Amino acid sequence: MSRLQVSQRVLDLPPYIFAKLEQMKSDYIMSHSDLIDLGVGDPDFQTQENIVRMMKEQLDNPDNHRYPSFKGEKELREAISRWYKTNYEVELDPETEILVLIGSKEGLAHLPMAILNEGDYALVPDPAYPAYLSSIILAGGIPYFMPLTRGEKYFPIMEDIPQGIASKAKLMFLNYPNNPTSVMADEASYAKAIRFAEKNGTVIAQDFAYSELAFDGLKPLSFLSVKGAKNVGVEFHSFSKTFAMTGWRLGFVVGNSEVLAALAKVKSCMDSGVFKAVQYAGIEGLTGPADALEAMKKEYSVRRDLLAKGLNRLGWDFDNPGATFYFWVKVPEKYNMDSIRFAEYLLEKKGIMVTPGIGFGSMGEGYIRIAINLPSHQIEEVLKRLETL
Image (cartoon, rainbow, N blue to C red; front, side, top):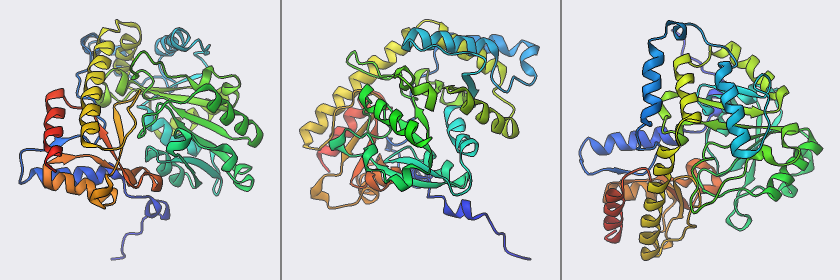
């Protein structure tokens, strides 16, 4: 029997860091009971009650048991349009400028198939959410990495992209508030990216998954609110982080109608849309009371302050996050370890799981990402364990 041959694209995929973390976690808990997992960014809050209640009601409606619209239900697209106008003062046509997704990751993964031809360049931040790179490889594109550095506030320097690459770059991924660094982008930075895209015929895909998770009265800026953005790009949203709906798989993308039409065509060949009942539950999230979101943000803020105080006491180097639920922390020099080894060391010695920075790209080496997705008493326990590391 001949040996199975997988595609070169699959062979070219980098190891998925969260799969490695899951294996590390599984191996550890086989012989330990004290694990504290600050690795994967899955909110520990329950989906708010009004959304769950709406879902239960919609399950009893037989109309929702049929195939949904490929674009998403009209009522949800109209609710998204109103939400965007209220939150960001951006006008969106529900028919042509909004597309519902099976979670934002699905849309981000399919977008390169709609934009790239074999051998086209795509610009990916480094460090970045790993799905961007994987989706480029699977679409047959060539990734070009844009370094994100602390000195440049973790935004790509457009002028550093060689013109020979820039002129062939069909797609650029951005992500603010940023995972893993937690920084937010300003209008001037977005304007530079828009000018780059206009000059080079590049589509910008801005991942806005953490749009509602900001603290200290700060409000992240929508890419689409910047002049010219809709001409060159789209913005992705997720219900996962805002409404603690990670398992529900609901998201959307808005912006340039030509890009969305191309993505919708790809999706029509790949999936059959989001279960209607989930979409109506999503409407309840967008239009219902914001009390649960505000309470969640307040709790994240308490946890952030608690962890920041403790890490400062330890002398660890980090920037206090203004958004997301992540800390991007330098591996302390005294341990003389790379990020994977330090993550393994924390797990082996103290039962603490974090994400090694190298999993987000080569520029992530020397860092770890800590997610504040556990209650304050467990964060306090983490700090106690670190004090005796």
